[in-house]
Each structure stands twice: as C-alpha cells, then as structure tokens.
Image 1: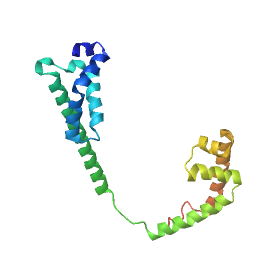
Image 2: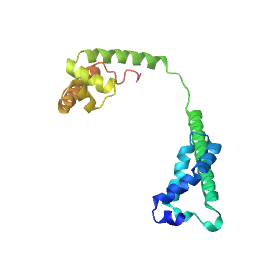
Image 3: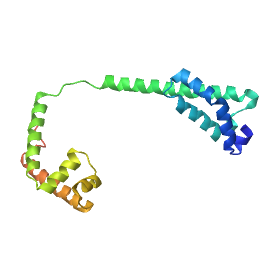
Image 4: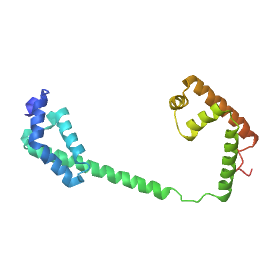
Length: 181
C-alpha cells in the first residue's frame, strides 16, 4: 500500500484510511478527547500522504507507525496548549489591574458629550456616514451600500464629516482635556 501511496495512488490512501482510520481516531480521542480527534486523524493521514517515505517497514508495521504518529501529534497539541496557557497566565499576572481614575472617567464623559453634540451638527448624510463607519464599525463599501450611494461619494461624506468634527472638537480642546499640564 505504501508503495502505491508513494506514486500518488489516492485509492491506496483510502484503503489505508478504511483499515486504520478508527484506530487513529480512537487513539486521538483517548489522548485529547472527541473535540480534537477528527483534526488529528486528518493530520496523521495527510502526513502519510505527503511523506510516505517516513514509514519504515523495518521498524514495524503500518498499524504501529500510525498509532505512534497519532500519539506524537496529540502530544504536540497538548504541549502547545500548555505553553499557550502558561503564556496567557504570565500576561494576565503581569497586567496590572487598576480601576480608572475618577478624573479620567469624568473627562471621558465630557468628551463623549461634546462628540455627540458635534456629531448632531453635521449635515444628515455626513452624520449618517460617520455613525455607520465609526460607531457601527462598517467598511466604506458597507456604508456605501447602506446609504445607497456610490463609494466615492461615501468616502467624501466621511472625509468632510470627520474634518468638520475635528474642527469643532479642537475648539473644545478635548485632545488635552485630561492632561493637567
């Protein structure tokens, strides 16, 4: 079978899968649980397909080879998950947990009020474009479709609206409102 797989005979791989697929899946399920077993099974057979020369009949049978490859793949996944969990723990432990300062919260509320006021003074089409793009998180293309306007017109409305917002907000000096210096 391996000789046929080496020359690209996908029927030979299908026959090997039919014969040993449940074994590979069973080993993966025992080591990782049912969630990752299908992926590991696919990886093991894909590896056999891509590198059939890695099977050495002098070291054992195909059944043993597939079981060992499956175990190795499972251990790689477990090690990777352990390292990821350790990294996440280190990051969580190194990130200081601080509550926002009252001053920062107050400045944020005032700034939000000024932004809402400035936004309300924009022409309807500019305001709607800015709201869809920046408050609703739409792309230029999505805003254009939602507004039933050409993309170029939408970009112009956004550019003009943002420029006007910038002028109005700079007059309130919101950029440094929270900085006491």
